[in-house]
Structure formats: structure tokens, C-alpha cells
Image 1 (cartoon, rainbow, N blue to C red):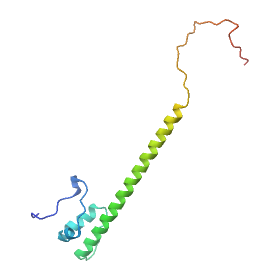
Image 2 (image 1 turned 120 degrees about the vertical axis):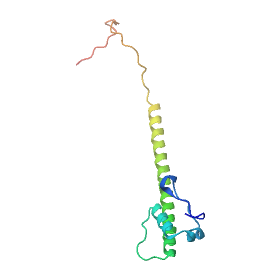
Image 3 (image 1 turned 90 degrees about the vertical axis):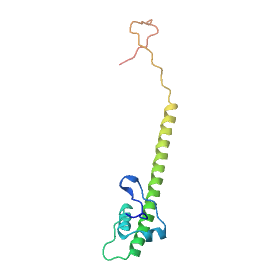
Image 4 (image 1 turned 180 degrees about the horizontal axis):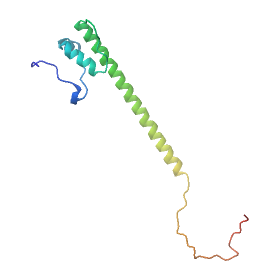
Length: 120
């Protein structure tokens, strides 16, 4: 690798930065193919000119950016849905009175007049 070689990409470093048109023209054919692969697109096969690979890389970068935007939107929507469900549960629980627990005293006796008689 020479002093003007493009930086290495994803194997351990995260996403590749999107390069401008002139920067793409400076990359080698092998580097263009690597970046197409890292974008998740299929590397075109057959006899291709460098311009074809640059065009394929631009398309792959645009597709990847669109997919990333869609995923971010889906994650945000899912997060809002979960928060709404949680708020709804809290609101439903807040409106239901819960009796406070008290210890049972089995030794306590009531007068026969105060006892409820239940027919079975």
C-alpha cells in the first residue's frame, strides 16, 4: 500500500465513509470491488471498465444509505410504539384501585349478628 492508498474499511473499523466522485476515480479496481462488497451489493462480473465499477459503487452506496435510513425509521417507529404501549399500561394500572394487604387474623371472632350468612 502506497502513501496515497485509500483507508482500509469495515474489517474491525465500522462503516466505510462515502467517497466523492474524484476520490472514487483514484481507487484501484480491487479497492472499488471491496467497497462494493462492503456496501452489501453484488460485485459485477465480467469484463468491466473502471467507470462501470465506480457507477456500481455509487449505486451501492446510495442503496445502502437508503436502507440505513429505512432501518433508522423502523427502529424509531418501534421505539415509539413500545413507549406508547408502556404508557398505556401505566395509565391502565393507575386507574385500578388495589386494596392494601393486611394480615389475616384467624383468632378474631365477630358477633353472630355481624356475620354474613351466605347460602351455598
